[in-house]
Structures are given as structure tokens and as C-alpha cells.
Image 1 (spheres, rainbow, N blue to C red):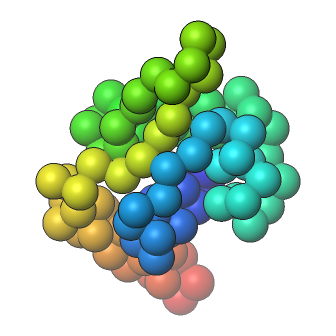
Image 2: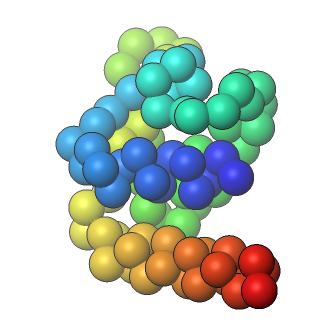
Length: 88
């Protein structure tokens, strides 16, 4: 769920960049705990869909890897198709 929300936000705001705390506060439509969002961010960085940059000691800034935009859109479309099929 956190991955879908993060990617959904980035599709609407492709230039957005923020810390975990900022993402929790501004990007998420539901209240998730920081470890769950961090886990989602780590997975997205591992896939190459997001870029992680150290801004100050012990603080990471996350943003969209625009080079992977088409791959992300395809992933979200598959998720949407799966969700639509679940309601039938």
C-alpha cells in the first residue's frame, strides 16, 4: 500500500523530493508508520524507481528516477487492473 501511494504521488508530482518524515506528512493519504514507509522507499530505491541522496548526516532525500517513468506507469497500470478484477 505504501509503494502504491508513494508512486501515485510521484506520478502527479514528478519533481517532488522529500525526507521520510516529509513523505509521511505530505505524500501519504493514510497514516502509516515510519518503518513501513522506509521499507517501501528502500524497495523503490532498490528497483531504481527512486533516487536516494544524503543531504545532511543521517538524513536522506528521496525523489523519482524519471528514467524509470514508463516502467513505473506500467507497474501502476498492472496494479490498477488487478484491483479492478478483485471487485468482480
